[in-house]
Image 1 (cartoon, one colour):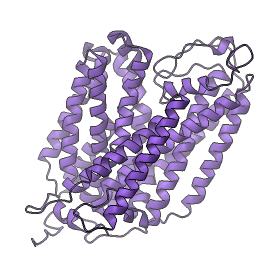
Image 2 (tube, rainbow, N blue to C red; image 1 turned 60 degrees about the vertical axis):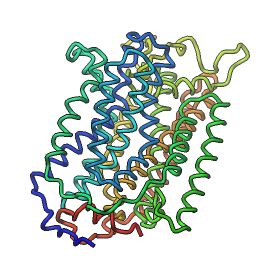
Image 3 (tube, rainbow, N blue to C red; image 1 turned 90 degrees about the vertical axis):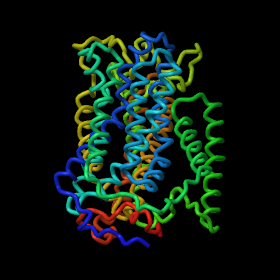
Image 4 (cartoon, rainbow, N blue to C red; image 1 turned 90 degrees about the horizontal axis):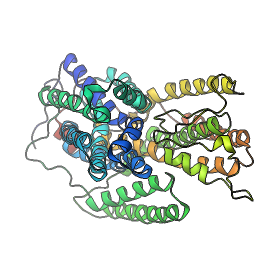
Length: 492
């Protein structure tokens, strides 16, 4: 067996490590901001390409679905070939897909590009955390992982603002196409830095990485896609079918993983059960599911209450998907005249494609009861979310060995997407059912109470976390050994 290269021999300078971290955060922002940056451009795209409202909505949905569905496969691939190889591949194809989307003149080409963008973003995002754990000294990692979490949150929230800015200045005279062309210089810079930087981890020659379980990956992708689609505003028959597909695919995936665990095979489970042996990761995943369900449900119901209860126009480019808002409105019971309950004349406004553009019939000078309290409480909620989000990833990954960091990050991100989808679907439907006869305030209070219960459960689970209790691998504090050594370590 080839002798491992010592960490002191493989060490890189602090400047090189900082440069790699900066590029990692930049590509993380690029991959995550595309989840929402296109929302603000949907009306322009629809007019330019002559699309139907349903086709325009799928421009946003295609990216989100492919991104969530491919996160775990992307993390598993990165753990096998190494973070730099996976990032370079993902960034290269992501950049080309961005050019394809920007140059497209038909919906089919545009959607194909968005699907490729989402799949490549799913390959990029888990590698950033893996790179942090491999190249940075131990003293840097807590702050670096906090920066990773903060960048992810900021990218989602700033997407509509960045997209709106590019549209308002008509960058390069390209109109909505600038929203996607902007990825070209970012991708080129990232490829240049990653290719030339003294990256310390390289695969060991003469050794093969573990082969991928393609059947398991396919079942997992189908299950995740069905789960997210079922709660994204489908009609009831479609939702029932998707839930059936979810149950069958997930059962098949679990059976496949048990089969691999109990037989001598070159294949290993995609999601190693030992990832959940540490309390921090196990409880962190549960907190992520409950917390994202509360966050997603709260912001959807807040959007609906602002429109239905306080007659506020919904912001263009809102992160809340327009299909989910329409479903919540559609699910309201009808009255004897066939009208939606709680849908009076001033509620029946056209929903815009960027999250909703409405006419405020009260006028800008009229005071809206309860608006000030909502501003204060929403600000406090956002501040609390920021305080929790920044250290979350660092605490959860303390139990995870470096060789499994990408897969663990992908699992954590999938739980975020799934929890948000379930929360918006379940609480949005509940809000719609409770909004009867214009009682939007009662419906909002009830859904906020459920969100508070979910948040309280997260706080209780957080006491089970053990910050600093993670395993310290040999040589932590300096740069890692060769990437081949990291992948050669057994998962258990």
